[in-house]
Length: 219
Image 1 (cartoon, rainbow, N blue to C red):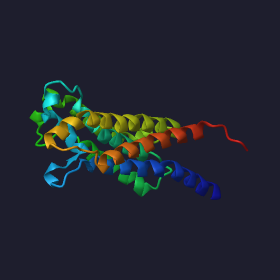
Image 2 (cartoon, rainbow, N blue to C red):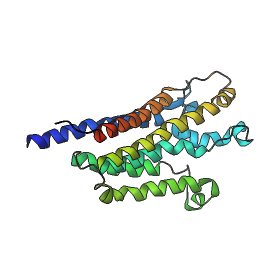
Image 3 (cartoon, helix red, strand yellow):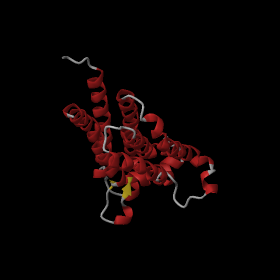
Image 4 (cartoon, rainbow, N blue to C red):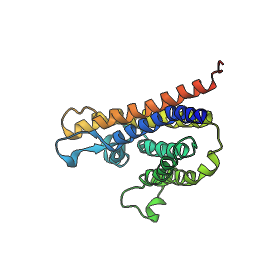
C-alpha cells in the first residue's frame, strides 16, 4: 500500500503541472491578445484565426502567414487532453473530465456561422481536418492507455512547442498592421503572454519529466 501511494504521488508530480500549465495557456488563448477599452475591439487568440483574413497586408500578401496557426493551441490542447486522459495514475474523475474536454476543444476550431457546405470550402480544409483528427483521437484513449509515460510526455512536448511559438510569432507579425488599424500603439495583452508561457511551461515540464524518467535509478 505505501508503494502504491508513493507511485500515485510521483505521478501527480508529473502530470498535474502539465494540466495546470495547459489551463494557463488556454486561459491566455481565450483572453485578450489585443486589449482595448471598448469590449468590441478586444481580440482574443481564438478571434485571430478569422480576424487576420481581413487585414489588408495579409490580403495583399505583404504579410505571408497561415491563419490556421492560430488554431494550434486548440489542436494541441485537445490532443493533450486525450493523452492525459489515458494516464491511469490520475484519478478516474479527472481522466473522464480530460477526455470530455478534448471534444469541445476540438469543436472550438469550427468557423463562425459554419455549415457542412462551409466546411467543404478550400480555405477550411486544413482546419476541418485538424478538428476531425482531434475528435477521432478522443476515443483512442482505449489504445493510448497502454503507452509508457515517456512517449506520451514526448508527444505532449512536441504539441506544446508549436502551440506556444507559432501563434505568438504570427501575432507579432500582424501587430503593426493591427496597430495601424487601431491608430494607436498596441502592446500584447495578457492573453498573449499567458498562452505563450503556459504552453512553453508544458513543453519544458514534459521534456524535464522525460529526462527524469529515462535517467538510471540508483538504489
